Length: 117
Image (cartoon, rainbow, N blue to C red):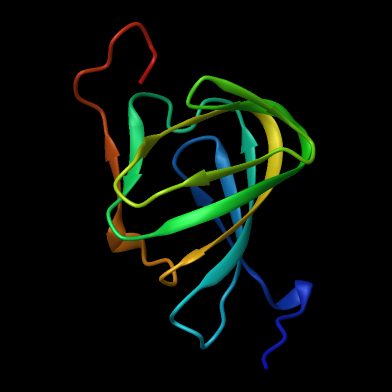
């Protein structure tokens, strides 16, 4: 068992209008973080994680995931290889597998149509 205290989290910006609080553990099979979204993320296009699949729970605020509205206590999942984007002002918990690695995540800016991607 491993416990990561709030004050020991790692905080960093992520894709334009988001901030991530990571709780980095020695377990490389899964991880957990809190994502704070404050506007369209990324500003243009979408993101995709090539290997990481996650389940998320909105813990405050309102917004959208891929154009679908969410609010506090709504859950969503993002399978590996899925294009996605966020918009709004909300915070969510993200738990996924395998443990997140920035090299797995890409931003796709081509083929943007009507700001839907």
